[in-house]
Amino acid sequence: MKNLKPRLFFVFLTLTLIPMVLFLMGIWRRSDTRLTQVLISGIAVLVCIAFSMALWVYTTILQPLEKLQEATRKIKEGDLDFTLDSDEDNEIGKLCQDFEEMRIRLKENQEEKIQYDQDSKELISNISHDLKTPITAIKGYVEGIMDGVASSPEKLDKYIRTIYNKANDMDRLIDELTFYTKIDTNKMPYNFKKISIDEFFHDCADEVGLDMEARNINFSFSSNVKPDVLVIADVEQLRRVVNNIISNSVKYMDKEKGSIHIELADDRDFIRVDIRDNGRGISNHDLPHIFDRFYRVDSSRNLSRGGSGIGLSIVKKIIEDHGGKVWARSKEGEGTEILFSLRKYQEGETVE
Image (cartoon, rainbow, N blue to C red; front, side):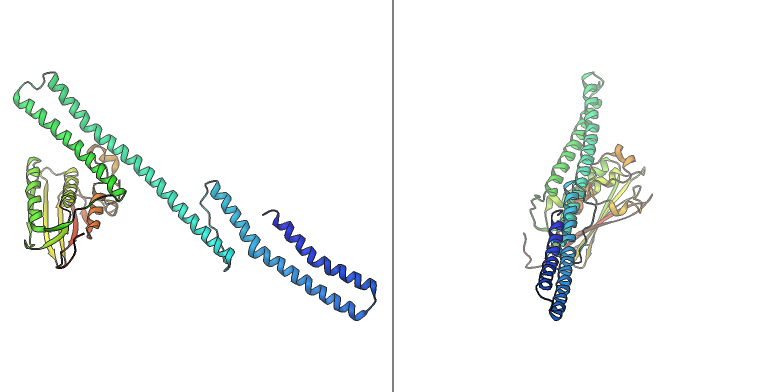
């Protein structure tokens, strides 16, 4: 770029000096007033043309190229916080516009990578904490058995059951992480088929009811959906949705007598599922973000509760892959509702 300016100046001088030399030669050869006037006019025109061309080349080519060179240098140094403006509607202007679009994409990719690295570190931190908690408990109970603390059959049975439950917690956590890896890389295989949604949720209610009874949480289920109403869904992943929402409700249950209710409702072309609890609720600040990956409501207080922060983001991903949507309502101190909808199966619809 530095070499272009001297070249441009040289071209300008050439276009102006040559006519001037010719003019001097003409004056020297003959003293013709009319010819002199013609030569002066010609020189003036050529000088104006040369100046205009030099100015045009500088403003339409050299200046944009200087901006491109400076932008390239900044990108080379890793600086993407700038804007390359160009109002020219020509090849150079379009090149600058393409370069600016490339810069924006690079900036977005850089921000996504930074966010992804941060999310990955947070996930590793959460998983490490969540794995350490049950492992510590398992070691403690195993040492108690080895030291003879579990002296009675009842106490030994309690220790073994606790170890079993803690191992299940670890298994669920690892399963959740494995599933997240699949959906994050869009490699999640679905096994869609037609199912009776009422029958499915009655089965889920039976399973959840037993678990809630063991946790001393009041559970109820209601449905106004007819047994012959069908949806296209992956049974395993739909069950994962319900379990993740229920687990989240249990995790943040702060009442002495907790309660969870599942309601299945017919909503024209859709089936609406409402899972509500009487837990501590979610603030208006946190509510819009609970389906974001790695988001934990008041994470400073929730480390003791465990959780990878991806449970509800998995719920959102599965429901959206089923063609539905999920949302939430909540009041602090009163409880939370997680709602999602699934489209009814229409006759002639294909199962993919």
